[in-house]
Length: 287
Length: 319
Image (cartoon, rainbow over all chains, first blue to last red):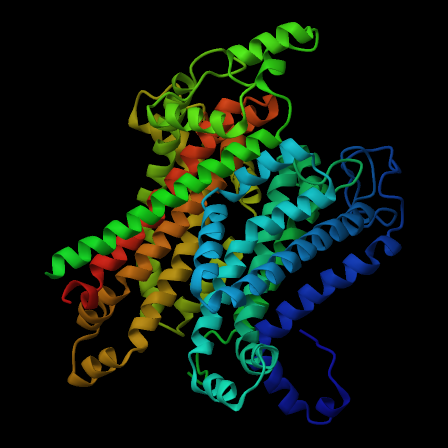
């Protein structure tokens, strides 16, 4: 594998090589996730054809010079459709995860101070958690319709309890430590304590939790779209692309394989990144 | 009296679960109110006159305030009366119970296959931490956890039904006569579900056993010269029972959600398919009942794991 090296590192190729070896899954995960983030932003601009336009007389045609990833079940360009669909999958998942994480962290930190607020919030999120997520999505979407906003809100609500629980547990651990007591004794304000004392100590596990939640959201969104309840036509996310081209599976059409692999690579990349960043003990590691 | 103290702790967990179930029933009832359109409209259709609508609403007590209807619904549910389906006009219980049986069959078989496999692999990975085997297992679990279950299912159909013709693509579960039929019907749904469940369970089991192996009492036992097998089975495992029970419960609860996609793909006649159908026909009593069943099952699993964790913790047992 070739990775772009920074100028300082390229002067010492051995050290750079050692860095790549030691952080292989970190670099691999980060490049996959980064790739999809870039595609989500500029992908639609790169699309050679309009995603909804029928451009090929044949359907499920294999990759060619004209259609780099072949054509789908109606003869539309797969590359263009994947480039546009990636924006829906990444965009909705990222938005929903952000909302879930921010609500969860806010409520979690508030609950960590204990008292009746903790009891009420914990019970509330336990209740949301007790309804299976796909079923919850099913009912909400059936009653409110499957617009992007409803999808985002539903996904966020489903995964807020998890973010809440993580943030609360982390904050509980840290607030019990001496340096927080010391800061409090110094007379620091609550804002300073949360931002400068607690947050730096929990930022890594919270970031890992964010990544994991992003994976869950992406999988649930793809599952909903696969059932026909997610992103609605004429728009399509990667899950819908798998659904509409499922007939091509029996002869291995790229129209169904490419979006499926795209989902898998996005989630696998994120998982690699989390695993590497959260310091899972490795062979010969420091632990 | 340590026993009484322990009993009180267990009773509190059960009480907490019942309270959550009550809150869930409130949530389920309000979500179904949100679905809009009421049962009277659904039954009479578009050509209904306002008088007929009002009459039927009164007969079905739909003109009463929501909290009264909730109380009535909850009372009926507690008494075992799940209401009447708006679509078929049959009691919901007559439709749900056979479906529930076949769903439990699927879930039970999956648990039977996946729990021993996941525990064995998870413990093995933790004991051989850092070895090639451990890294292979953790790469494989990451890959499986990251892939959507509909993809695993469709690839399984492609390989075993379309290409190899070994297994039927649909699991109607009607024509089971010999044990071989049973295997053929359940092989693919169970395999797909097990993939998802096993991967999660392995990761959590490995983490729990690793934690136990890192503790100082295991270090002390190792220095004492305890054999590796005894170290794991006698010293580390008993202390990892709580987290492992939790891992099993959480993984099996994933099964409750994941089963929807699997039942749809394999056309398996379970509760989840009933739910999908009920949502598309807006059959409110059916939706409410199935939602309550799923939530109750989840709470049952989590509470059971909590209680196992309490009972297995010697610090609580010998207090």
